[in-house]
Image 1: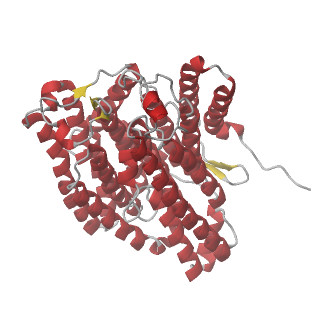
Image 2 (image 1 turned 60 degrees about the horizontal axis):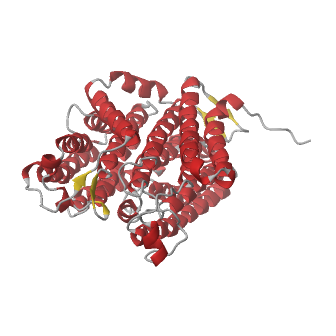
Image 3 (image 1 turned 90 degrees about the vertical axis):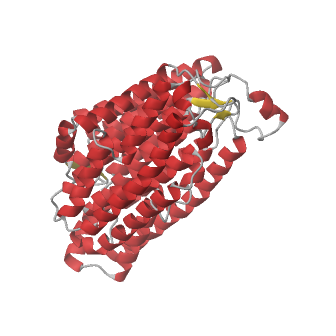
Length: 511
């Protein structure tokens, strides 16, 4: 007799909302007239992401394992799913912006046309909109939410592919600088395939060592039988695959090129949501499956954290492009986040709560920073060279002020969410005796602060070029994103108590 697995539809409701909206979006793309697709797809994507966000709030306080043990519903998973869904909804608004580009969209009208061809030049000013990006982005959001809830290595791998494949596609859909965008997509795809292979090979080794792919089963095997060479090798390969997605050095080589070449709304989406999803999976794998044998992964994560912080801070100093600078900022922040992962301690949850808060704060701040990047434009589209931002405060004081505030948050200046997040993860590391890691983090934070402040000085204390870029007037979608991200960055820096308490209450993982 084959018994149907236990299945809690209420626990699956966030996924049902998001994937349901994505599937309906595919049908709309297939059958709806062209002129109704844009508003319909935007509405569907927002319904799916906002609906998924609401469902996670309604599930707060639940702790169970469903779908035959393949999915976990717990505080940390729900917190991360809500973060991903909320950031996904804001990203959809950036996708929907039509007031900044003369062609009314940041995405190419027809992706199948060869870049640089006469037809491609004609389509450069065509006001047709590439609406396939909305169901693709919604599928990616669903994959990310599944990624952080997976209680099974096979489900985790499937979720990894579901979130990755749409990103490979939408990275290559930029309307301007088409060749750079296509190069970014190819690099991301090829390196992503390597990372997926590492993850799958690690999964096979772990299964060979333990006889199971369930995280709880792996933990039980580690507790009773100990860890052998095969299991440690498998864990190492799994960590490599996850660190690639989290853009942690030395697995970061794709990040600057992809961040620079992808359409900026897509870059914002990846920088915010993918980081949250990747670290959610890292936390679940290390804490649930290998929490009783943390000696197997703690030295590895310790070393990777230092490398990521140093690489991100030092190489960020050499960048002349705003998007590449923010890419190296992302690599440095990945190292800071790993200090929180180290801060688990003896199961106290301090590091887990700190990491949850940091992911929320970083996602909102970086999404706002990339939203500002979409506003500064010249005749070729977005002006991302640092020299083009000289004297920006004279052209648009408000834009310069918003960018300055967000950069200060990324640098970890007090009264911003960045300071609160860094303080939380550094304290968690110190509590478990990892004070050398916290010292390295403080030094690299100071180094990274230089390239943030360099852009601030450039905006306020340099003369603008006569033929310099202009600052576009954003439409309602981008205005909403900027308002939400700036307000959240301020609130999480000035009065973070309630959200810190929420993260502390959510800091539990079931297996």
